[in-house]
Structures are given as structure tokens and as C-alpha cells.
Length: 108
Image (cartoon, rainbow, N blue to C red):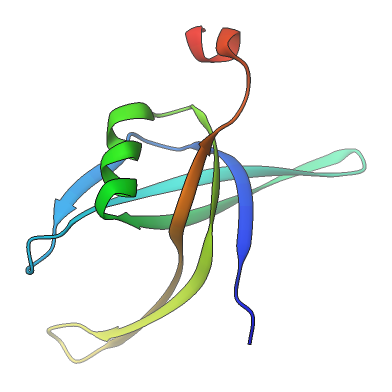
């Protein structure tokens, strides 16, 4: 099955960098995507994770409020916490990232 997506949004906070148990750098962040439905505007929030050089690039070049275009795939995660409760979440695993918007927008 084909699992690919691209989405444009604004970072809801500065990206956070982590190091995995295997010593691999990764970055977690969230974006807000506004969808215009006629007169009502609805906002969707997406969690994302990027690995290795893509993670470093995001940390070095993006901050809260900045427009970003990300491409990747949707990933579903399931885990059990220390109390034995099962949890599920969905996030975007980022393969590539692009600047979006104009230089003037970025300077403001």
C-alpha cells in the first residue's frame, strides 16, 4: 500500500532535539494546518518526527510560528505505559522538509 503525504503548516513551538538509545539524533515538532471550509476556518494539528540530517536541519533553520512544508509518511504507534495501559498515537515521519513562504514573512 502507498503511504505518502505532504503538508504545509506553522510550527506550534520550537522543535525539540533528542538522541535515541542508539545515538541517533531526532527532532520532534508539531505543526498547525489551517483548512478553509467556506466561511469557517478549521485548524488541524499534526505531530511529526524527523531523523538524522533532516532533524539537524530542522533544528538549525526552523522555529515557532514559521511556515514549513513537510513530506513523509503517516505512522501509527502503540505502546504500554508503566501502569499497563495501552496508548495509541499517529505522527508524520518526515522524509524531507522545505521552506515555505516569502523572505519578508520570515523576517517579520
